[in-house]
Image (tube, rainbow, N blue to C red; front, side, top):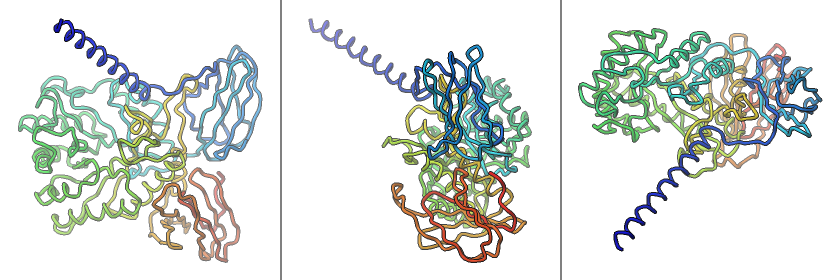
Length: 537
């Protein structure tokens, strides 16, 4: 009888574990594949929902059995244009017969017999000039992921927004299937070809172990470290257009080597990899670190032990920091570098910074509650570091919603496709990035001013005498929506324009000989003064 009870208990435990595993798998699938279902028959077929021509916004729709009413609304929910379209054999094309200014919008399709569909879209303009300071994370190395099968769509779209580089991996285990034999998987090759066609630079993170060495953990034995160096050399030889490589990813985190997560363990790797790869690829920038968080103590140990000699640049992931703290951290790391490098600094790469839209209490601390807040923090994350000249690259994590938990899933600039919306819908942060790039295209950083006590003003100018200030209120509470009144001094320029993060023209003044007053909130604004009229949106 006791054996039967034990056996029943074991079976019960097994059933509970199986059910739990199924539940967990379902949750992961829910986040990683699709979280929105719809009973509507209407399908918005556009492969991309970023329109680079404000005069050519159109929507392809299928699944319509009767007339479809449609309307376009701006970010504030105000109708911009609307109409009715008749299907032809279930399909129809909606041409918005007017210019739609740069900005963030929604389109709603409605049919009494076929249901409703609402989707977000963005309107931009010409792609900004290349600037490899602006980078974005993609995860194309994940086999059969939403990334790996869509890079031909994502790369041109990201390039059009103004990203000039992307950070990604090609896993060691993908490239070296048997010891000493290397080949690029076809899916990876297609993505690299797409980079070439779009002049997209790759910040390649050689960031994983290989089951052929050290049991698949990050390398620690002399044999595995040498093999890791040869893998980097072989990949760079096969792909000479790749000119930046980052040695490992978040080594100081949980996925470290048998040696451990210490700076001394990482230095053992860098001492072999850096001279080996550098001797064969002298023009390649070898980036050391890739640390989770700031980890100043880790950096202190690494640099004091001679690590400054084993990287052309150093990288870290400053999630959740205020704009002011981003600069302070860069200054602190630079002081450590100079202390151990005869007073000479080296470039810093912020290879992961981002903000997830999530109310989940667990996980990455870089969380906000709304799309507006994510867009604001994207602007902070790219603007504030420009006051620190040692920061040579900022990489936004990530391009597309993707991940196993709510927090990790919602970092993207774009949402995944759904049954009824085939294109990747932009979040407000995607449009905010384009606005940032277009507002500052051809500009260089000049200085930072503090205005009216709590307003930070980052001043940029170009060679035509145009000045743009990027301004916002600093506050400790994301719920603080109050404004500060700022008096802008007379500039002597003929025009003054104020633009929001989503591209809306908040003010346009002709003849600004006198001073002017501007209300500033926590949401950044672009204040431009020039002798030429502002460009059309």
